[in-house]
Length: 505
Image 1 (cartoon, rainbow, N blue to C red):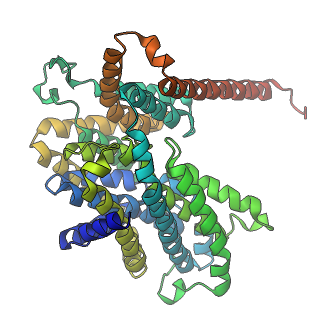
Image 2 (image 1 turned 90 degrees about the vertical axis):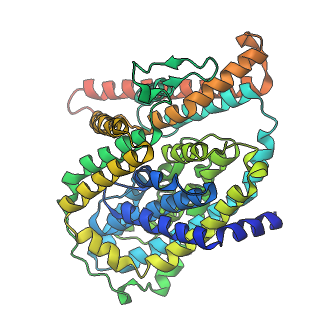
């Protein structure tokens, strides 16, 4: 492992990789600062910039955009009470009250430190468990991979919260969109409806930019206009007291552990990690009334948790090729666009890509810590800029980025279509994240199922009877049944409360 780490740092410390790591962190933070946008929208918008780079450089930049966006999302949460990312919504609870108390600088400083601590913990976990999981994955066959991908989709819908029915609908829609294009086995065109532009399938970049870029911009314009920054943030105001630092050590350690574990699970991710870390601190606190009123532990715990989860989310994505979130789905798509197949052979076939990416995480997190503390003033000025000028520029950059990929007006039309659909999905309460997961995993799911059925000579019972495949499929079924039973119980409980007579206890 020591030799691999040296190889990774030798790769990451090349001038071009350092430059793109810095660029990714900077751009990710910049877009993450804008309310409503985040790492997912940032990666979607900036993905076309990486198509002309070497695979390692491209992934290093995308990785920087990812955890840069996670950090940037907390800045708007603290200063404007508008979460830049879903996981940063927890930071609003105590971050904004601290800002109103004149301690915005301390809150932002603790956010930077907690992000670095959580990110470092996640990187260590990735280095330690990634190769071991990859070695285990080498023993899996096509049917096992089919079952694992199915489990990933089911877990993303059932564990991630929200309506299971709506999540399943979005997953199925993603699977259907994944079938568009040329059939891998027969070479026939499927569901192209006469459009030659669809022979290679629906554009992942166009879909992601529409669902998460355009839709997020449209939905957040109204809310972003209602608040303005009144707090002044200076270098002196960012210095925490000894008591502040003492209170953050334990929450950062616990938050990093929680986020590191949950980040590697499909469907959990940064949002659940941040909420669970915050809930843990509330439960452990002697004085629970401080939370929600500016408790510094309420910032340190969720920030360290979501950054640790952001790093360990790469474990299943890189080692077994199963993304646990929509953001990781786009990262997986970027790997495949660059001709690299994620999975157990990634570490052995492309060691410079894997270990160079991990080494760049250390560098990128250090960039976040060293650069963003003095750049707080810049981000504050960005938030003070009128959003009616920022968002049209973002939309224009999205369209230019999509068009530059294949110089196709059709792809720009897809952005508009999926942007409208994404906005309607949000209004109706449907999260587009499961759709992206289904879209990316769908073709691989189908391919592995076909291979598994060929090896089983067309007998589906042989898939179920296999110990590994059968166990994973059974776990998927248990998750679905457990979610449906829980949903039915909640529905019945709601109806009982609605029919209870007034005044009854």
